[in-house]
Length: 291
Image 1 (cartoon, one colour):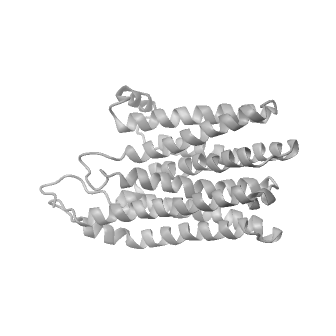
Image 2 (image 1 turned 30 degrees about the vertical axis):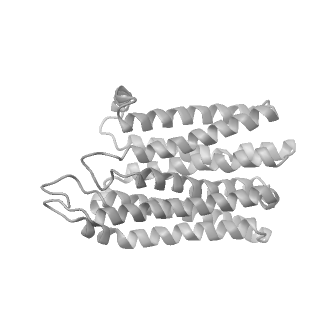
């Protein structure tokens, strides 16, 4: 796990930014299924600063991984052929569209029709960004990462983390009652369940594949064993996130709702960060032999 801590800036990036991105999916469903009055829209737009901030802080964390932050611009040279270049391009496109949407919404001059279409564009680009974040780790020289289980778990983390963030946004915006409307409540529970299954399932598939590998210096089973406790703790946090949010949307008392919402978001952040560190701990490079 010591080597994983060296990747902490990237672990923070791949935790915070996808969580913020995933929140826009629930917001898209909200604006397309629930009619909010003007005051409620203003409160939701104000609290949308939370997922926006997560995305921005995530990108800032990624820059700390670079010896020279100016090198980030050189990554675009491999656009189309380099997974890292594709990730950065997808992330920049998503971030730009997200900021345009949020700034426009905050002016109070966005029509209902424009909002419904624009928020879906942000939501889709957010999930595409999460997928490409996972794709960036599919490197031939690191076979334990070179699997579609990586992108799958990133999309899962984006869904479960984003759902938790969106519940917090709506709770703080005093729109908790809208969480209990039939369509939105069902969609939120489905997104949470899908996120937990894809996130934990993708990591489990990766761990199983890594366990069967080895090079001349280390075997994959030892790497997985060393990260096992972190994986267990991360999984418990992720399941706890889902439990808190389900209680929140199924009619938690007003006094407990805010606490549950904050608890779900914090559990999601801690859980995803632990699972991302476990991912980095299962790094097995090409060596003398691969079994």
